[in-house]
Image 1 (spheres, rainbow, N blue to C red):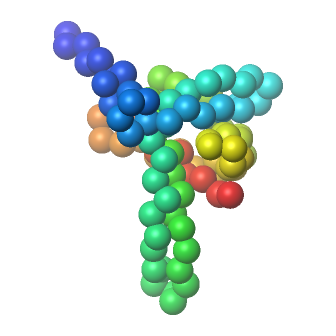
Image 2: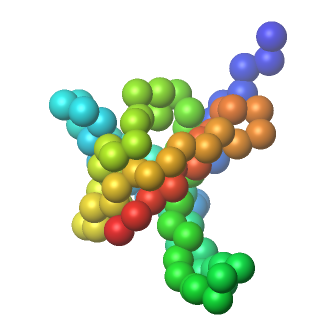
Length: 95
């Protein structure tokens, strides 16, 4: 079985940044890729769609309502969405 090295994708010298994930009583340091995409929604509203891409293995215990601190801003996790083959997960965030 092929074992992919996912660390290449969350390298802090490239796109990834360090974050502090607070899930329940557990707090741990993880690497994420932060995306603050600006969007216009169907009902004439606009705003930011904030998400952090994380290795799924680092997000196994994440639940809606958990917190993640990225670059001194604390976000609430409102949704988790596996990407493609499940190696990575998007954490949908609210500031």
